[in-house]
Length: 162
Image (cartoon, rainbow, N blue to C red; front, side, top):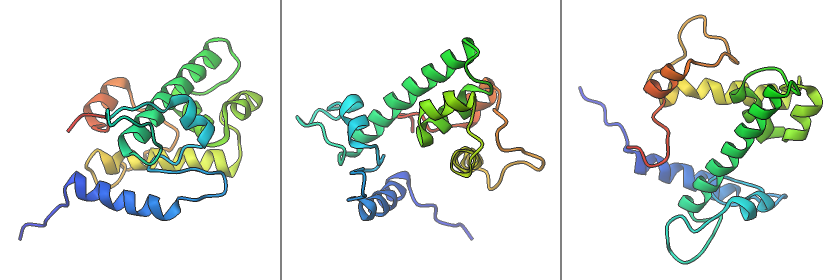
């Protein structure tokens, strides 16, 4: 018996519904990426060419989040290069996204808090799911960065890729 797997558009619709239910959060986050308004204002653009920049527009929101994450990754790499933090770029970037780069720099790495550590582990746990496998391999450790080759071959999450 063949199981029907919902297409990515159907899954995206489910995510949109869930996110829309969360709109109106206390800090004003809106849209699929739930970026704080000041962050969206800095990174948001009219990425779908509809004549408006809106956090509630999925394309504008997702690509703003991508630009923001790229900037955080550059800051994380700089922190590593200047010995202001220990760790790896991915974990520092994820922690900075969750708790802010100032907290990462103050801790000289991923802050040892439930919020920061939990977020990094939660995101890393999703790698296997989105690579099309059911679970991380036996013995996998949260916080261990895949090699660049493994990442490119097994992570089909780049914007614009099918």
